Length: 290
Image 1 (cartoon, rainbow, N blue to C red):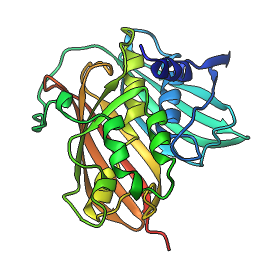
Image 2: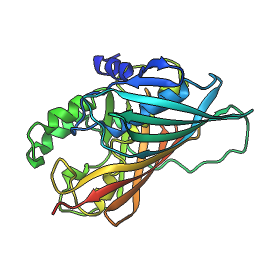
Image 3: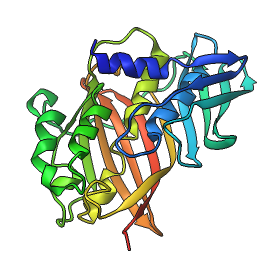
């Protein structure tokens, strides 16, 4: 296991300070605020620690309320909404400086047999044939407004091997494309056999690239290029089938709409052998600087 993955696992290993109350810290992010995927993953950890071990997460719905301060701890308070025979529901509020910064509702279910069908996995090249972040990002260093962006990207994503199938938004600035993006990802190292851990790590990664497809539709490169400003507004995920975050997952993303200073991204995550594991939807602020 890589040191970066060790650090990320430590980040997700929240301190319990009271029944239903947990405390987490933050790590360096590409932008000077708490990374949305981090707070979502930590909130899911907090919820999951109050749920019986035989119940796995099947959905989450969340709102980003305020910008998080990376220099301050985050306190997660869990409300045990319901414990039913098959389903368990939890609500989590993340607080900093006395104010809520994030709200999550999550549902967990015991395993049961049922009807089965799924959308087919889209075509995608073998992830091993694609460039790593360390190989890809330096190609575009001259397009970023800050020369330190490449190093900050690589540091913030060091625990995850994330590979673009096509050029990222900052690679095709000024050339609108189909609003669709694909990336393969997996953790840099093996993980324990804990379903909650794999779900939380997928949640962490899911906030990294989902709004790329919005940018592609308009030939925008993103905040690092300086042609848009933005932030996540809400985030929802449905976990359909078991998966491992330390094995390759295809994140197939598209944007059906952008309007009113907001952009919508939706995606499906498939395992490498073709099983539909996760559906993700996120809306974010996407504004052109004036």
